[in-house]
Length: 320
Ligand code: DGY
Image (cartoon, rainbow, N blue to C red; front, side):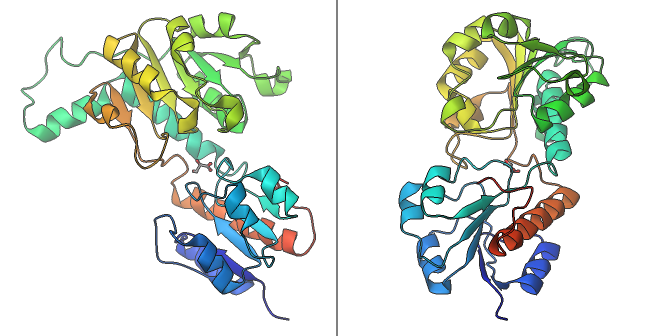
């Protein structure tokens, strides 16, 4: 039987390309950047399935223009805010993603950003590399201790809970804001807040771990920032769309927010250039899940989800 045609929009880890070539008529690409002519490529290949990535724009008009051959979209990510789910549903196109397997790596990234931002590690690294470092001094690059402080987590899904687990190792007191309270076995003693009024003022540090999309767009806005304690440290390893950049930049400039650690941005990779001028922000290139183990696991999960959906089964990682 002929294999289904799978079009990958981005270069994949070698083990995953091998797996894709084994299980599909795989149309792979050497490119690590967004495919400029996605529709033409899908049309050309008469693809049964598309393996896409964050940054690919699969909005309603792109989905409407896909050829009838496309039955499944798999995204190499847990987040699927780049895919118009309703439009896919309307076309009868199934969607799957990569939940679970990236939680540890992404939480590690959030923890790393928190530490780097609070302890001014980016500034320190730049100082050493510049050749201007003159040696130890009692007042040099004083940051904020993270251990024992309160950590507010906005979005207590798998990644948020993994971050909470790691932060407990630093003796942090965990508070979280989400739509509903978790059962005690998942909450693990974290304090639930059902409104911003009680949540924001306790956030000596704050990590954004909610999904992107319309429901959370610019959640971190001027009004919420104003209710955070002065000197807070903010981390975002979730989605850039959660942050109103102008508001965060103003707060970083004024010192109301002492420091921020960002892995994700609005309009990636063209982040707001004002961030580049600020010493008190650590900037990473969306590498939350970027470990060999995690990317291989993500690739396997999405490929098996695509195969299952093409075969008419319902995999655990089906979105819709
Ligand atoms: C995701 O999976 O949504 C991440 O942002 C990519 O690592």
